Length: 629
Ligand code: ASP
Image (cartoon, rainbow, N blue to C red; front, side, top):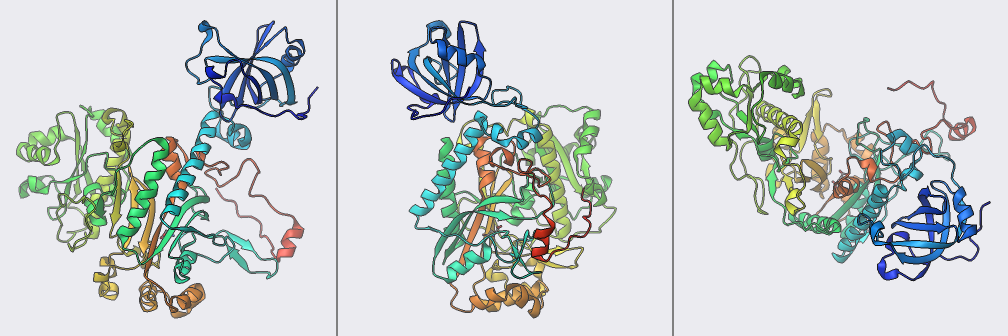
């Protein structure tokens, strides 16, 4: 028989009772995490969002004892009782309430619970699909309760920081038109205008720029974005951004704001981040890390071609005009021939196709080229048990890749302006560095247990932030045979590179920047184009006809002409930030109701077909669904 709540009021939270509460009369409400029935004595572990308290029901409290016999896991109950210090022998130091228990006087069964496929008290995790189907039960688990609470605190900390800096949080529409972030749109059919569609925003990009034109010179929003991208693990079709925009900024103005709110966010886990974060130009990131989101916890690459005499390179069939790059992974120790062979499976197959060689037999290299290898070790700072491989271009294909730029020592600058006017890397040089970067990450992953550089030590150094700046403005699209905007088409080119827009688009740098943490891109942004004439030039460089410009962005091009201030901004992924702060393995651990890697919500079972009537109202006929993988 279930009881009603009546006028019973909760007086305390389960997880907050302490010895100092001993003697208090309390009313607790929550879920039965576990029940142990010792006959005369029944123990209930009562759980709410703050934690667990042990409730003791003795045979003396006869009515409560009878009811407790019926109770099962996840029943919802109210306990009226008194707090008592536990006997010394039964104190549990592992939980905050481990020094007390509550002696029940009355028990009310507020609801029962059908047998569950898993319970929050289980020590082994259920299969993720089952967890997502029963997400409401999964969310009761202490880990997820903690993650969701952390998410709340982080969002509040960021809001408070930005509010303190004079930012307004301003909402922008979800039902809008296509935005240019490069993914597919989620579309919403209009009933009133059959055959017409709203698009869900991939980001509030154009609206936030319009807000600058409207004079709200510091905008932010913690906002949902929707992108119908190719399905991949750890991508969510809807995700949350901390989106911001400012008028009259230099990139550094944006950097300082972001550093400030990240400091506020990280203080939620007691980590004090040092700012400003270092800056690194894109080309330097490629030279030193082979990737545009460097993980600074691992040693950089070293360009070591100078260590080799021309005849050495010839003997190794390596292209002398391209970089020879050392990848060094610390404290891996000796590897057997077989281990080295197995490692090759980890390197991207693309490398071989690109004619990029991975020389991993350092013993043999040392035998054949002792002097060169001694230099390699010296240049790359290798210690005795570090694992070293060389990555370089073979001579066989691709000819020579143009004059190679040597890597820059000290490319990581402390808060100073990034960039410089060195020639950009040639495509072939980039391939070599990027190949080395991929090998570096594959090896680091494989030997994480040995190098231990990814283990958190509970200090600010666990979190290596940097700003990557001076991205290329355009990317060449092989399949389409044209230039695409590397960030988005509203990003301003470098003032110095304006004259190359038509003559040499590949060499144009953008005033675009990413904030990177431990090899992950947390956010990207840019200084925007605020002049209509430059915007039109960029569209032209992107191969967009005036008609297409009008059709896609006409309203925006018009708005740009009515007094647009210089402006810029950025957006960071909140889900990823919380995932890192929580030390969670997946975004799904920090999103209350996530979708699977196949974009399905298993709890509500979406997407689903809709009724014929709904389709008719929308003027939509569905072709026989193409099957997707
Ligand atoms: N709208 C961009 C994005 O979502 C960020 C920005 O440029 O502010 O990636």
